[in-house]
Image (cartoon, rainbow, N blue to C red; front, side, top):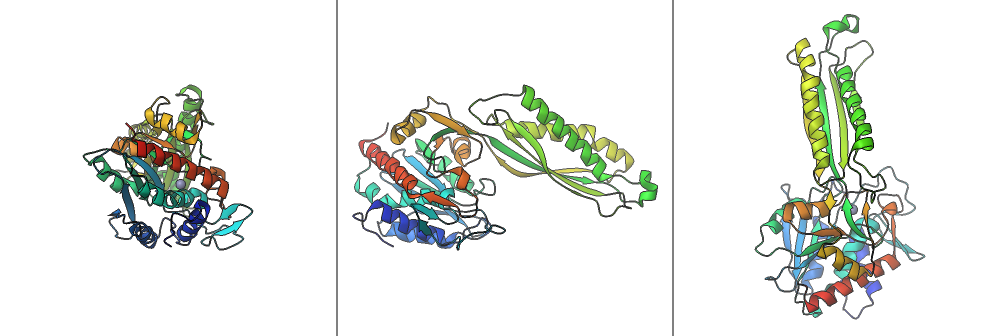
Length: 396
Ligand SMILES: [Zn+2]
């Protein structure tokens, strides 16, 4: 696995990506074998990584610093987990890298083991460059289930005496500089009613009918946000969105349903908008729906649980990290994307200015026969090469 720096970069990337794709790191499995593989690779260059293990002991992230520890550095950040392949039709084993016509196929090639492979492939150059500004690698897990796994590592970063100057999150953007994405807050509402024979329906408390009041209100607010809420034309859908995604309830036609769950999400434009919107809905339901349920029977009511929550990214176009990303990418323009990333957490939890920029297209992420073009990975390697040159000079 230890490839000397003289090996062409494309070969190094290919070897590392084949190694990474070979580990089945679907979010519900352990990623420790993959983490050990990266640690072994780094050890060959005399680099030790800080392992941050989760509560189960089955998953870990890595924080790696190359260059002086006492200076603020720049972070290259990627997650190691991938979405499931169950129910998808693949033309080959999704956990075996296959190359055809300049495309590298396999689960996670685009999202986002390709980026991680490029960063690792450039480690020999990082080592040789005598960096004045350090480069950090932040390698996480459990991103696909709501940007969960990066948080313990970010709590450590937040406590460091010297903070990183900025972070590049390498999610697939076809190497476009992305300065914003929406935040997301997901909530599950569980309605507790009272079951009765349907012939005496008025004696029961109908959980589904009360849930319907919530669903209708969510819809009403979604329409209002689209018409009169905050707008940002850099997004394809330029406003905050809100919807009910899942409803479960009822057991039989002749039973008043005593149980109904409703899951809804908000994707908000501003840093905290998604949570504000869902909090307001919860407060409304507590004031407008729950008292009527309790009046019918004191045991009835609604329980709300958070399913997931990550903040929006809202980096300003004139921030230094944006200028640097554009310089390194050789681009003048920036954009915003619909999908969420860990970048908002780097900003909100650790105060590290962040942009999203990485190889491959989001259109290929999560799909059967996921692939990344080798040309995209080489573009990304060029970006990292210019980052190394910049850090060798020193970034203020
Ligand atoms: Zn991803």
